[in-house]
Amino acid sequence: SMDALLTLVFSAKESFYKGISSLVRRVLEFDVIELVEIDVAGGTLSFDVRQALDGLFQPGYRVRVDFSADASRVLTCFLRPAT
Image 1 (cartoon, rainbow, N blue to C red):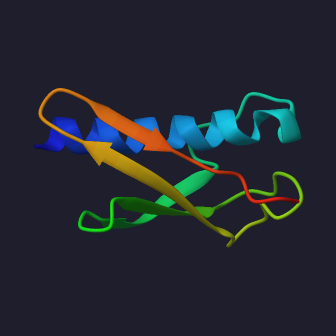
Image 2 (cartoon, rainbow, N blue to C red):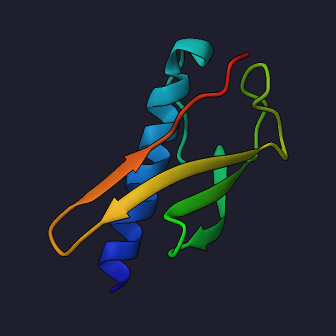
């Protein structure tokens, strides 16, 4: 459903933001990354960084967030690469 998809994307973005918060040390707007692909079979969402953040996280950098979902919950996980 559209609600489930929106929840998944929101959760994935939050995982990314929390994963890099210690690098950027500021509150990020919702549009700093843009969804470019959902791989349901592989359980991943891909986003492109749209604004300069820190280190690797420059415009055009591709970010992957893993996910698992069932009828009642969504779990997302972003693992920050070593910088």
